[in-house]
Image (cartoon, rainbow, N blue to C red; front, side, top):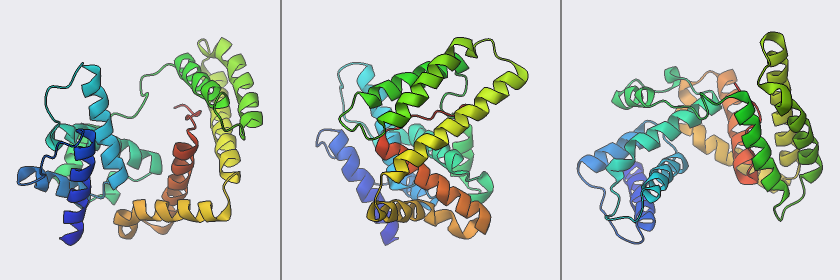
Length: 239
């Protein structure tokens, strides 16, 4: 119970900061709701990302009129959790079948599900171009080559069908891996150990429910996700 209380207090403190210091206690039904996130294995980092997503929409509507309550963030937290577990290959079988599991499936909305291939390439090129313009230029040789190749692919992507489209998708996956590998190579042993430890911590709630091979695949995917997040890399691969 102490772990659950600590989880709720962390969420409460984060929501307070997002609300510009206005504290809304997480008690009663809200406490049970947030405890449900913790018991389902929603990492704290994923929960706060869901809260951020709600606030982004809230800010987009204009000036805020009242502090946001944690209950309002439920759907976004579950959306981000669903995206996170899909990225790591964690299936519903690895999650206890509870009411929260049903809610997660009901709110499932993987990123860019309906995005066209040309639009996807445009977005990736924009992100990579912004990356090249940043202060850290360590990935520039790799990024430059990828942008050049994507520029060429974008010109014909709209009309691709069948085998030609599958070949491009395979190539995008290969480029995505090459970018991740290049970014990971820049980390020293201490940073790599920290990434590995964070990945293990994220997957801890699911460890006992996953076969060894599936766990290792998810752990590797978690490290890659952390590298992508810290290095601000777009996802080049497309479904």
